[in-house]
Length: 122
Image 1: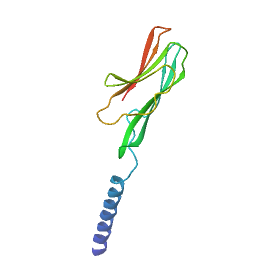
Image 2: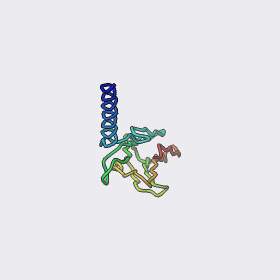
Image 3: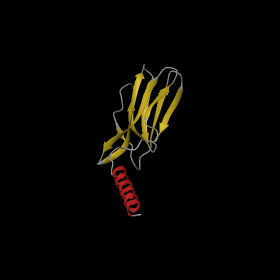
């Protein structure tokens, strides 16, 4: 019985150590909408990228809007809670922090086709 008790105790210790290693791991959690989200209109196309980056001492979402087809008349906009934070006519937006208390949405306006298409809000 003593050897069985020692085996059980060793198993519990191993599980405890494993749990501590998992909980203290520095691997970031996946962003809810992580990845590339393509926004297309009749004349304009952009890649809305959402990635987890190490920002302000922790892992948080960041996103950017990269136009790939941008003739005159295409506007590429990022908003945070409805306030414009990036507004370009063909240049990339650069990375924007999208952590707690932020809600960033991407929209492509196609004035030639008189349309607008929104991407992911995160």
